[in-house]
Length: 337
Ligand SMILES: Nc1ncnc2c1ncn2[C@@H]1O[C@H](COP(=O)(O)OP(=O)(O)OP(=O)(O)O)[C@@H](O)[C@H]1O
Ligand SMILES: [Mg+2]
Image 1 (cartoon, helix red, strand yellow):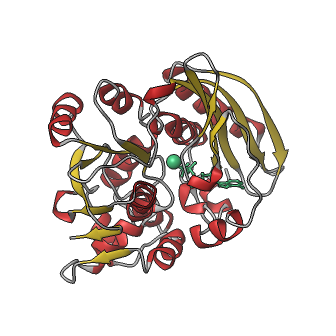
Image 2: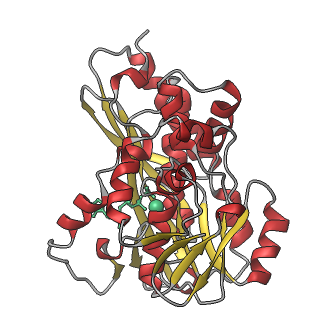
């Protein structure tokens, strides 16, 4: 049988268009204003916020990408967990989804069925339903979801709102983009790959549930634009500096070793280029750790900004693999120490 990953050039969130190219176009687009649309694409947020005028807002996001694993059912699970994550990252409860599929004519239909079953099982686990979808024939397989969720109007988490003195919690370990690249090169050990797959298929549901009773000042999920990139979005939206302490990062075993071998996803170079003047490294950070900070993560964890007291409560409640990875300071951009 054809290997799914052999049909793609880039995979998972690493397949995103470079932030430099994306934002250079988005910045030039006319912004369609509407009183009920509380944010548009100009703020680089995880989902749109639409006021329902009854104390609630509707949240909507869409995400799809090519496979990073060969097992179609697992790919379906990962793509669904990744798409739904943007609703959790906004502090919302996902409710209803639609499938988005690009499927090659040369593959057996049982592959499509398995991808969709993986998606359905993740959607069910999230407590949502699938209400339809759209499928086109395309040489490169891709799968994802459009997801609609809801939140109380005053309780939405934005990427703006991080306060000086906050600490930052990241709820998953880092390194899946590098592990996926090593796997594609047939150089990945099974233990590291299993940890990465387990991480990618895990919904951010429990992270959202543990955090929703706390006072979250800002939130996003760490995906294709990397820890440094998504931290920079939060820093820029909040008008603060984000400091990441690399000694506190939870890193999947072998990821740094593979980075040292140069097993780096293509998106990493785009992220590094875009962030060159926005991210400062203390000069003692080894190159592989710098690479990890720029590496696209597929279905990564939530990055939450909150008081130290709340963060300690969160860590106690949520447990592994969450870590306090940094803090918010005066200034701008991202400093990696
Ligand atoms: N084609 C597009 N048209 C309009 N806005 C876009 C388009 N592509 C991306 N965006 C917007 O650019 C911002 C960044 O997009 P991106 O896909 O990184 O967000 P995201 O959904 O949080 O990503 P991820 O799924 O990796 O967490 C978002 O606000 C998104 O809505
Ligand atoms: Mg996101």
